[in-house]
Length: 434
Image (cartoon, rainbow, N blue to C red; front, side, top):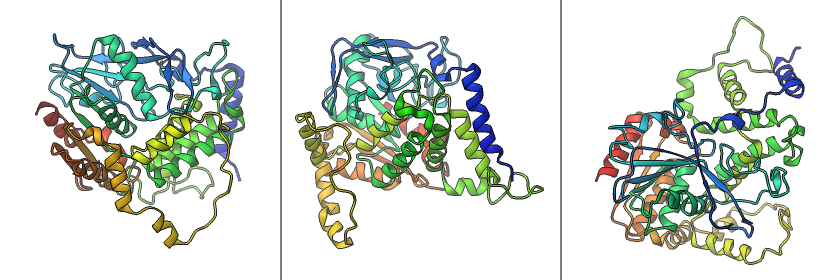
């Protein structure tokens, strides 16, 4: 039996060893601005960055009193290029939502989007050069979503002269950032929009991201993160992206698009990509495996796992930060042991969790907030969006709007925030103008 999928990987590795090319993310910073740090950034888990930069892009015009700025936060894989502009005419990742008369109306608002700290599209991250003239690689410190937000508020906004945002908006990981921005800087954020986000990472999404990181780190070309002078771990990153893609779209949509159809029914079955859905996943992984830095993927993915706005989680993080003498990156002292279901339930009830969340987000009690979720989303299910809205109501926030898109409205799963332009864009536009 032949294995063309394995042959393709080996051929790509040989080609990259022979003549490159460099990963595409090294040349995707056209038209960006760079905001350099003024002060060192203290990170949540004890480390600090003495110097760093954030890449950002803007659309629209800042008004005279600087009150119309909107900070748009990205998901895991996005750059600052949310919309095209003269400096970069390539369509951005939220192209249909930004512009005159659109959800983020550039006739009214000044829209800012950054590449997050730890990213690979211009911002300081693992591939950046450290003080010893070598890439940080996996010497880069562990980051949190809060660290990313803090960097935005300490570099980009001061550079632009923005003291208070009209709104903080984000989807997926950006929804996490948006909630954090409102909670961390309530006096600087006028309103919050969280689309397909969450107030804490749930076990199912942590499990999926863990599997993605394990697949990537198992690629021999990863070399514990020290691959910048050689061939990048394209196979591991491709497989990680394929796993991620399974969580981005929905079963109902895939049933309509692919069904149980094979790519070429005239040929005998193969162990490589055979069904249409398999060829789709292969395509998604293939086109991404040289467009993103593998180490950035690891660090930002881990930051998503660490996200938890509960009060108890914030206290635990503070305890670690104050005790940096503990052994870094150590495995737990005891391996996992099976427990009876009853003991697990007694450990933390849903009422305990709800109260813990409410205590952790108290600073959002007076911030107008829009929460949007999609019933077809399996990565950030609609129940997680309801958890945000319920927690805000519990702390007395009477300016919460909750929108849940049913499957008959959108079958795009988690990617609804990218594709359902009307059903996502309309409530965002109305909320911003209210």
